[in-house]
Image (cartoon, rainbow, N blue to C red; front, side, top):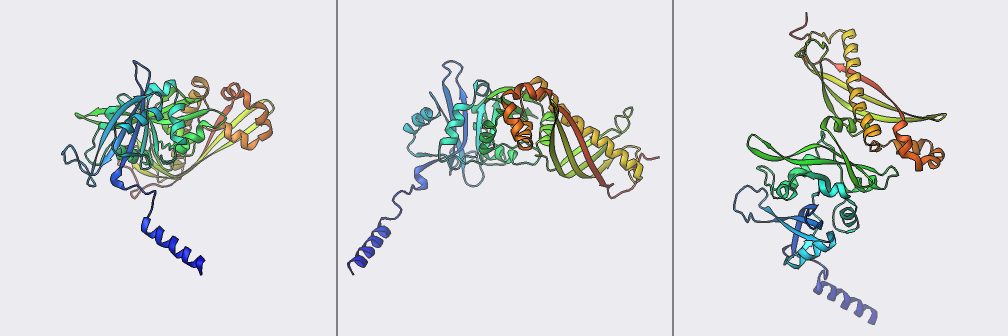
Amino acid sequence: MQYKRWLVFILIACLLTGCWDRKEINDLAIITGIGVGRTPESNELELILQFYTPVDSEGGGRSSGGGSSIARKIQGQNMTDAASRLQESTPRHLFWGHSQIFLMSEALARSGIQEPLDFMTRHPEPPERINVFICRGDLEKLLHWKPAVERDSSVMLQEIGNLDNSLQVTLLDLFKMTINPSGASILPIVEMTLESGEEFPNIIGTAILKNTRLIGVASKSQTRGIRWVTNKMDKATITLTPDSKAKNETISIYFRHINTAMEPKIVGNEWQMNIKTTATGIVLENNSKLNVTKPEHMRQLQVMAGEHIAERIMGVVHPAQQRWNTDFLGFSSAFRRQYPKIWNKNKANWDQLFPKVAVQVETDLLINHSGLTNKSAKTD
């Protein structure tokens, strides 16, 4: 009986006290965007945090969802030190759990991203699915930028990162790449671009990192090649010129069900990689004299499309091997899975082996629809 009385007493006490460790939302400074750079003068780490504010404090009326954002900047020896200094001057508790983007300046990336990455992966609050970018130019300006449609730049960049035609890298993806034996990782580069008198963030390419240091930048065209090789291309549109003498005569093809597989081989002392891509496509536009309703012309179109895709893939494989000598395409992982014993004997020499890997591209494309109309207006 006494045991039951104590049990009732404990239950009543729990109900009266409520959640003892709960933090009210009014007591939180909700971080939506994180920016990290280095000051050129003191070389200290510079932390810029973007906060969500329920009411538009600037009165601009451009916010959506009943709120806006503000950004605050502070310096420190590392991210923990900078965040602690900012917390001292902030009446609310810094809450990292709703962060949407993580930006690192290009200058910081060239010196190494290990310090901020260590903070982000050790701290219990930042989401592992947060989108990560390298920022070229003024990092603070980007976090202060207010879009016309979305609530703030964090939401805008998150939506850009989630698009099918962009390279998306989350914090979890970045961590996995940094612990890969190749030591290579890639991140999208964002820059404020001026067009028609208005500035907006634009993905301008891909940052190539080796051992957490930025060593090169891949162009937009090379970024598409990276997505083909790494099997991150779900759908794609390519435009061909069947007649090299008639540049204005083009055919556009929309591909879907894209799948790319790597087939590693070791023959004697030669390491080989066969990159095989399969896809199905339809003709979206035909402004050429090629009659795609004829089977022989359709086969010709498939060959041209395969050559175009192979050229795009090799357009990033060659620089990866010869210019950067950085295996951000995942060759090492493919060899490790296929030949674990041989890989363990040679992994220490991968920097010498990777540039010598013989690469071949094989495409298996099926263009099974010529569109709703038959002949082109230019067909003879």
